[in-house]
Length: 100
Image 1 (cartoon, rainbow, N blue to C red):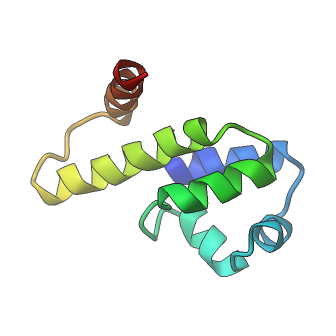
Image 2 (cartoon, rainbow, N blue to C red):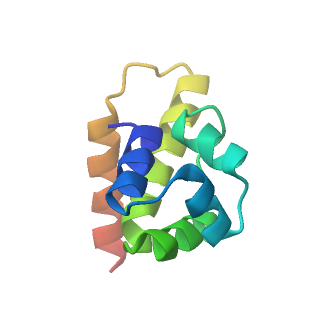
């Protein structure tokens, strides 16, 4: 699942609209919409922590999805477009476990 779809699903599970979540986070609804449509760069760690707090989820989870999406975009720019997102997510999770 891509970052935007995942974020949209988490927002709906929390019973939030884009506007209400954006307001809680101090973000604009337009920015949140671009995140959910994957038309902007996935959010940095600071924004992930703010979103996680407002959604009632751990920041590590949202950061894994954001970092995976950032890595996928970078790889695509480098000419590696065939890498599966699920493989990248597994890779990101394995990095975090090694650092613990």
